Image: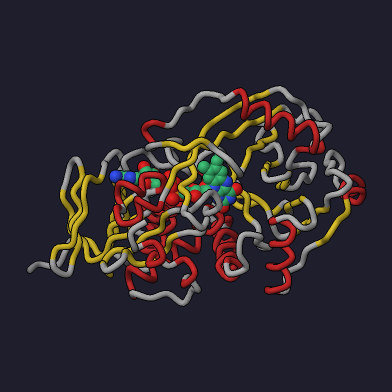
Length: 380
Ligand SMILES: Cc1cc2nc3c(=O)[nH]c(=O)nc-3n(C[C@H](O)[C@H](O)[C@H](O)COP(=O)(O)OP(=O)(O)OC[C@H]3O[C@@H](n4cnc5c(N)ncnc54)[C@H](O)[C@@H]3O)c2cc1C
């Protein structure tokens, strides 16, 4: 049997796949990236200008070691970019003291001895002109947090991957993949390829490409709104932080105005179910817009209310809200990242490194046990 033409094929070169492609190529692997769309497209889960990155992690303290490495890799990547892809602005997070956000932040900070500042509502108003949280709430400022320019990260990883010798085919849709002896075969709408290893990072197309997880995954529609900042205090140049507000059972977040596009806000909680990416409704939902406007009025009182831009995106949710990272159950030739549940871009850089580890060495030093695919391998 002749050796396959490729060491590894990466299916999906969006947020995670572009990083995997780069790390595989940088280690000298013969690697092919396949994507149905152009690099940096707006049809999946990696568009809308910015993504929050934070080290003190309320969702689960076990993300912190992965985040430390992710930060290092993004900083290294900044050295290759004309405009920094990672911008450290600090992140201000608020909510009731007994809420999920503040209790989770304190837990993660204690577990990993991380710096953070606890602020009362009055201290928030004094320190961050333009921010107002209710008097009965508190805030935590994480000075290490910031944002990533999401499309630029994808494009930069792909550019660097190509410079390291990776091949990249866009506009090519993968129809099937299957194991052939020790190797894996990928059939697209144009070609058939064989590789030793396959990395599948399909974003919201995961239910189709990764059938074993399909019963456990659900897609949610998410709207992003950009408003006229109204006051200079909400601009990146003025030092406005990224922000996240827990309010009752809802969570809103946003970013300083970057590149004259406006102050971006969105709701992390909620979202309408989406049957498949092709059926995503991209219209402005007036109810969602009203909710976002109301949040701006209460928490960002100096901001304007004029909508300047809008887009929609998708979260791919797992039942526990944590990612799926590792080998496909019972198929060691195939590694996957899926179900990022609306908080996975910040670790894309280290995910790329992990995929390269698993594809080339079958193991990784990174602690990913808590994200094991095996937890969803059983029937739903
Ligand atoms: C509105 C919104 C806000 C978010 N905010 C944050 C945040 O602040 N911080 C954070 O860390 N994370 C955040 N996330 C989550 C994060 O952005 C996503 O989890 C991450 O970008 C998804 O990357 P991905 O590579 O899995 O998916 P994608 O970037 O969508 O990439 C998947 C790729 O696979 C390709 N593909 C799929 N099927 C095929 C096929 N059959 N053949 C060929 N190609 C295929 C697609 O074309 C696509 O390019 C947010 C997500 C959304 C939607």
